[in-house]
Image (tube, rainbow, N blue to C red; front, side):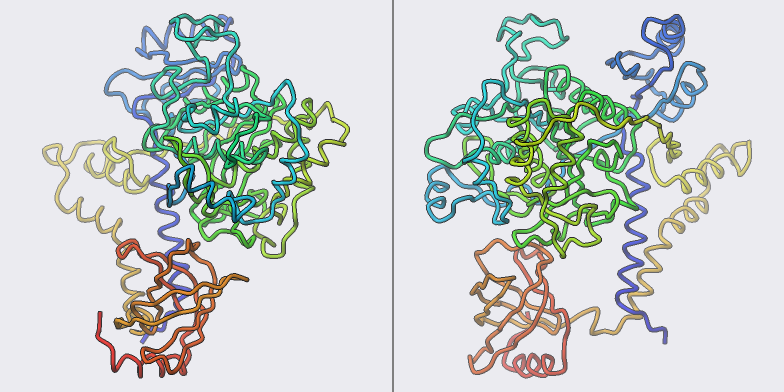
Length: 619
């Protein structure tokens, strides 16, 4: 019989299901839309000729332009696929590149895990000086050391919007105000192309109303603000910074690359010095890359969430955090104990440093507070630190901000080989260093090079794996240049395609069948026993409601982080003996409860559980 090591099985699973979704995600773009970069300036004859041909002959509709970057966003004629459109455009000698308008999405993990009213927060704050995170990143020291300046650094929150009426933002006067725009007069007073953009812009609905119909942007903005002041205080202080809300993610947390570029461009043109980007996707975009290069040239700081797939960005990039522009800060999520969060992406070359990202408490729409987890929550801590540095040193460029944040971070052994700095941010150290630093007026040159990824063929115009799509195209044409019988695909063609797609699943099923029965399935028994759980230096008391040779179902009111290593002392049903065992936290979506999976099932552990189970009922 073939013996298969469980870790080998898990590795193969990761390879197959890690690579296949990446191929599928490569097709995640807006149908019928493209972004085009031209070689010539907007005023040139070549550009005018291109537009005449594009609009009259190819029936393209201009949706937006980024003239300073010579980029344009087009919609194609009805029925034309993105692949066909890009193929045609690339034949034009004035086109530098053409690409799809990719989708991106927010980078939180659990959404809002628990919500609190303002009164509940103030009750809790009596027992904790800083509720946003348990990790010691020295934020309270920043509160006391930084004063409000007349000119406040602007942080653009490129996200799902903002509840600008939340008391934390309204009472602190934190929300950016466009002084050149008269509210609600229906006129573009400042001539920037946006009517009544008093506090920012909603690129989803094309308005100045910053509705946060997801909650993500409001939560992120609260974290940024919390670096400079106590957002849970009874009396909110004047904000030291301005928050510029730029909504480009919809109610589902999904947005378009074209709108992200618009938001970046808007932020820079309206004075933002820090751009927070708690969103991303697996698709490389030359247009987005170039927009970020433009932000570098303007001296701003660009902070991006590394992603929540628990994968290595060195091998599977996540954009925009994986763009190698010198001012980009790619942020991983760390726990209260300064370990890498189990869900966080990492990368010794591509992810820069850690920041708290587990059960982070912050503002939510409607005036309340809530906790959430993800690299989305880790990134705004860095943006807040950058903003406080600019309060102390307003002329500092983004590249120098990044250098100081890195050099002043706390190096931690548990982050060794995971992150470029192998460190977690230290807010106080970075801000204090910026206060006394001589401002560098220049930064390294960076030359943009488009990676020019080829667009995978689609399956019958609907996306899919490139290999399957090519086979589909080949067979639907009779294997050559002529159509098959009747112009239709035979049943056996479909079987071949399904067989290719199913091979990885069949292989995994076979491997799984070779695993010892004990590795695949354990009988679970009902139990009601006390358990003591130790996580780092914290100890909790809870109960277990089921037990097997593989683990237990854990009942506790505490918020636990998936993947955390724990030590447990489980009492027997009669209370006369106990089991001491190590494991890690898992979450059962079906049961809506925590579990602990044993790290190692010893013979002694098996003997005790088997003996206990004789008096227990199976679940």
